[in-house]
Length: 211
Ligand SMILES: [Fe+2]
Image 1 (spheres, rainbow, N blue to C red):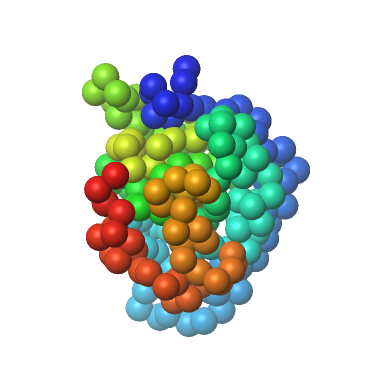
Image 2: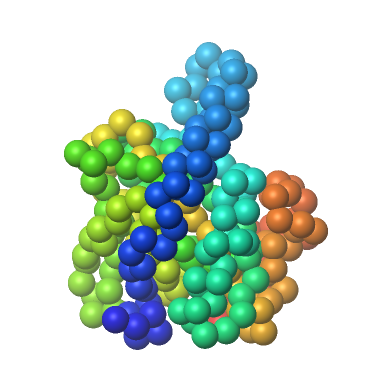
């Protein structure tokens, strides 16, 4: 199976179970601290526009670090050239969470979806539309990553039947490609919030939507 031909590839055990355990704990700590702020009329105050029943966070430090240290060399090995990390993102998904079919944004030339924590009796797989137009579900266990061409591959998730699942996403552009300007998602440094970007998502899309 080739990334260039199929637009995605499953890499088993890319991240060790111990590393996943560590970042899952750190991300849940972030969720619990954020939850101390009262939002009396909002059940999912940290949802985003894609997934309502979730705790969603742009570029948490633990996943920025994972992206830049452990995952980046794996991506470079598979695509055969140097990449820049753009941003990371993570969610804790709750029962009933769904994600509509979509492609990723401009800074996601190469996307990585990693299963960080899951409930073994409630596996929740990523839906993918193949180059042949088939709709398939890619099975992921903790530590497995799906590396895919973010602007070329439709993907989605059907309703989640468990209590909590954590997935993390890490995005890259080719260091010597047409989108290298999107390094760090146009932030001065990894780890900074989205307000520190020189170009927001819409501005990036306008500049780079035509490949
Ligand atoms: Fe996506």
